[in-house]
Length: 148
Image 1 (cartoon, rainbow, N blue to C red):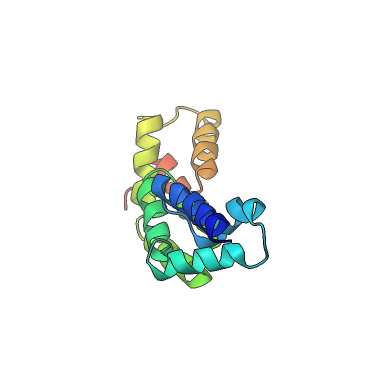
Image 2 (image 1 turned 90 degrees about the vertical axis):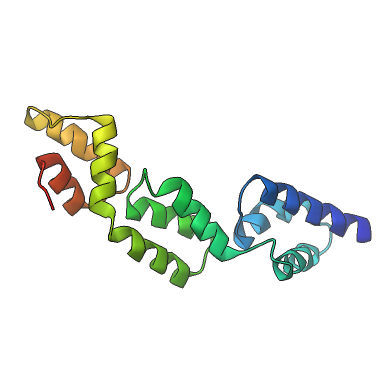
């Protein structure tokens, strides 16, 4: 049991060395390596107690890596997919919504640089921003070139 538990912890630490992972992500990735019931939970409990697994760091990591390129709804989906607590997700998304318009404008500027000349071009720009998860209000304002 000792060697296998170390092996599960080792696998978890290897994943955590690459990037922050939530407990739910680690469970999903490591459950196939569990040899006895409860073994994975014990290993993850120990790592969590030592601070190797930290949900707040996972939230901050996702925000740092993704917020500049994605709208609040896409970031929310990614946070939810990681199995993070609903309260932490809601708090992170509330912060993103305050900067949604300026982030959408920056993503639009990098991709298109200038307003579309016709309806088809505007529709293409709107679809692009929508695929990135920006709000309909922010998309409309950016594509029409409205200021704050």
